[in-house]
Length: 394
Ligand SMILES: Cc1cc2nc3c(=O)[nH]c(=O)nc-3n(C[C@H](O)[C@H](O)[C@H](O)COP(=O)(O)O)c2cc1C
Image 1 (cartoon, rainbow, N blue to C red):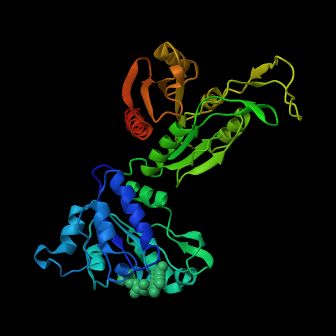
Image 2 (cartoon, rainbow, N blue to C red; image 1 turned 90 degrees about the vertical axis):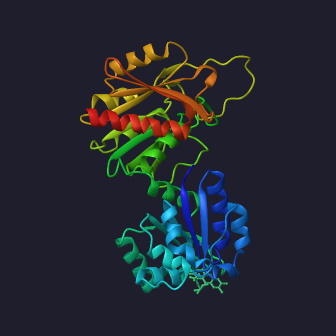
Image 3 (cartoon, rainbow, N blue to C red; image 1 turned 30 degrees about the horizontal axis):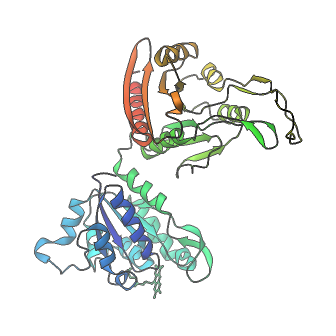
């Protein structure tokens, strides 16, 4: 979010306090945030809170410095606007074109992408008038970040809670990201698989799923229609992505092969176990014998099977190697008829679980692009840049 200029409108709802936490996260991630509050919002949170978090003035009136025409300047300087929380009152005013304070006037004067995050009592939210106003704004191109269901301040339950911070941040990122994969269907696999030999013991590997999650998130940000088949991990899958959870290699195979044959791009980054224990004991084995023999049998080769039936799908594999990385990966690229393969060095388990990674993308007989070494979100963006380039050239 470095360099992102955000216009954040805060209106008079109980969730106004959450806008302060959101502001802090945005600033920590490198965004410059200008906060505009309605008079009613000031009853819930003091402007000083936002001023302290952003290190910038907070705007509350059209008339503070009229010679600088704040409602125009603020939305010209920003690349994206978000109203969070948006009251029923503010949503109605925006839908009807009422501009009677700085926030509504600035939003109506904006030419940048605008997101609206409603938050209110469930009965207010479900009012036909409110739903019609939201539909009208959606039709005009506003991104509506739907509220969530759950506990509401009045002690009631229902739909009306402000969308999670993760969803708000993702919406902002999507709105400033060119939609280069708009409408493209993408399948990403991620994480390890687990192969059990009794009810509590299994064989697995050090993959955390972070790479697959980052790749799926970046594709969704670029507008793709993304399915993520994800092995066991404690990491949360990204918002806005259809996630299918699996445990074993055989489940991974079923989930992947069960996807639509019309999938346009598959990025197979999961670290699927090559073997599984040949026997499974329903009873937990007792401690006692000084050694334990476990025999393994081969697991299905999900990538190879995908390649066999890939048709027009572009198939990008991953190779985690500890030695002769590129030679081994090129051999895998050829043997499995992949369109491209991303190689990472996992000597000493580098690449697995750590925030940083290094990737090289290989394709064809001698195509090669070093994606460098960076955090997984940055590498995912570079990987998609390279995949899109390959698609354009093919
Ligand atoms: C304690 C309290 C909590 C409120 N919470 C909400 C809310 O969560 N959502 C909402 O739409 N309105 C809420 N309201 C009503 C708005 O504050 C009211 O409609 C106000 O006119 C909104 O002004 P604004 O849209 O200019 O900020 C609340 C009012 C009070 C007194």
